[in-house]
Image (cartoon, rainbow over all chains, first blue to last red; front, side):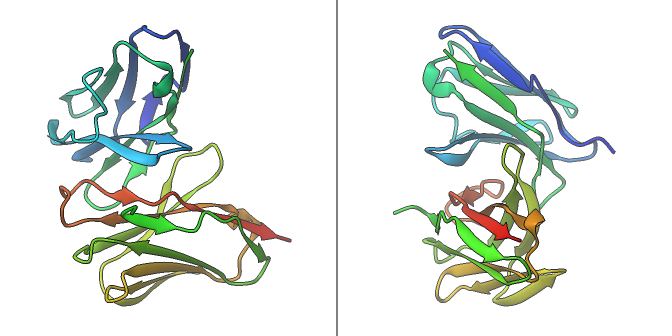
Length: 111
Length: 113
């Protein structure tokens, strides 16, 4: 079975540009999570969905960040406008309940 | 005070020895505890979770939970070079929604042949 699929794997963009990260969860998983990982702050939950509905977005750093899940097989995390401090690895994870099955991550560099 | 604390390491362990990792948490009411392993440049993967006081074993891994002392530990028996990774402790705090886990910063383990 395919795991969680994220794209792009690597992105370098200029400050001020819009960035869209994409995620396809494991089929049948009801929960989808977006995390950000940096050396300074570790692994942080940004937002999670249950059955396509956002449940907790308290980790979204500011209005520049938005996430959507239009259907059970697709989610996006958008940053507009991007800033250098957004440089991080962004992980998408899905779950049928306990535990998290992580994708390989999207490595974002904003210059 | 961080909600979940771990020693950053590195924890150097000879091959074949037992690696002992500790994690303390601040929310006394926490009920669910998780250990993840993350290889350098890779994503975290779940090793095991524990809910009740005491020990839980899975292969070479044992999780130990002591709610009174607010710590959870992970033992890795017969450590192998392939166990060299960063180990993340995660806790579900009572003040957070069900899906939100608080992660520690991780302990780096280096198993030396």
